[in-house]
Amino acid sequence: MKRLILLIALGLWAMAPNRAQAQWTVGPHVLISFPNSDFANVTKTGGGFGIKVARKVSALGGVGLRGDFAFLSYGRDLRLVPNTFLVEQKRYQALRLTFGPQFEIGTRNFKVHAVAMGGFFLFKTDININDGFQVFNASSDNEAALGWGIGGGFMYDIGLGPWLDVAVEYQSIYNVPAPQVDQTGQTIKHDITAHEITLKVGVIFFLK
Image (cartoon, rainbow, N blue to C red):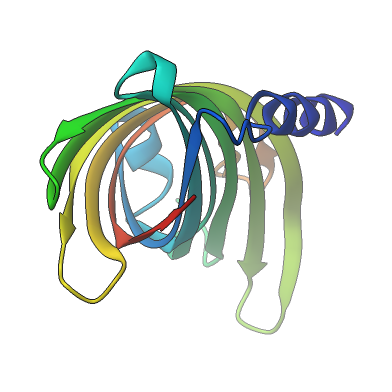
């Protein structure tokens, strides 16, 4: 938690407005996340919402600083514990807080952008067991992990004020908890490196 607070403070300091050189953009987004490799074995497609804030530095052309916050829920996954009549119910939720440089180029009504970001990913994992008579909690964890990501997309002036913003991003997150229930019903904890591809669709507001 202390590391998370420190990262927030550093990010806010880095993006502090310089009215002589900065132009701000802010926008809400809907997210769809597609887990890959080991992460796809422990969860399913996720969905959520996010907001991104960017500061364009005029002295650096199309380069700016960007911060993203996102919330994702990966739904509910039901599995039968092998050699038992127990049903495992697993839920994953995640919070992302990332910062990094963004580059954009384009015309007055169409721009493409690319970004490289790093930061904190807070994961909440809940595992419940149903024995046919009652549901009891087998495991509940909140873990902070470090990660990085790259992505790109486009912004288009739809003529209503805010611009349409569409992007695809790849995330790699280290030491994500992936608890599983073994054949005896005991919870085994282990960590994985989670990989996911995220589709983001939203709007961008330009602020001077």
